[in-house]
Length: 181
Length: 181
Image (cartoon, each protein chain N blue to C red):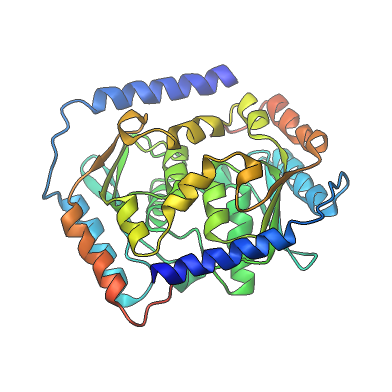
């Protein structure tokens, strides 16, 4: 199964390399313009932070998202997460290979993690990580934390009961009718 | 506002240091036992991957989560994310300061990002990142990717239209009645 998973990644990466050729910078991109519009609308409406995203497939926006952390009491409801979840719901899939995400700001580690799990093919972003940090959204701190060993992270991470928990991983490994992701 | 945000982090980190004293390893912890039970149940039911989590506040489980990626078509529905979202919903908050998460496996970068955004006070985990990688859940690849510069990531990241997008960040900065998070 490891080989199979690695194979899926290899194919995905090969596709990405092919699709990455001949990328022209586009300063007036309608998809990014829509992501930015969503970020502006969100500040005006007060629904959440100044961030918007769209997921595009075959040149068409299939899902939109804006930050909803404070209006929905959901710390995971960043614009990218909302757009990814909506795109998957609309397409009835848990894998967005072949889709691209346009986001008004560089994704934080949570959102970038989600982008990898969803296997999006490309990420376009406008504001940089540092731009968000300057107004108080400290993605940089989280990026630095993830690079630290457990013992040096600000939120303590403590391991326990590994042997007991390994049983579930072994059960998954031996399960024949599982749906991999 | 940057100072205010930094202040919140400083207070949070100070609380974590105080609470981190005198931690005893506990090999028969009922909260972790429940997280492991959820991971086992999930393999049996086929609802998703072999992962379970619980959020604990004042010695009581306030929310549970198991991986639901394949059953709900949501690549972000990892056990930790499900438990965090449920805990916030129950408490009516977007900040879980003072709560702890027990998870059957070391959080992937997406979930660890969510744990930082939710300001959980401590993370207990059982299986290690490498244990999950061995059966095909390649968190390690995503950790390595996040540490790479944009140009060397497997999913291309392309910046565009920063000037246009900065307008939303400036609007947020100048907004007087905003809810910070």
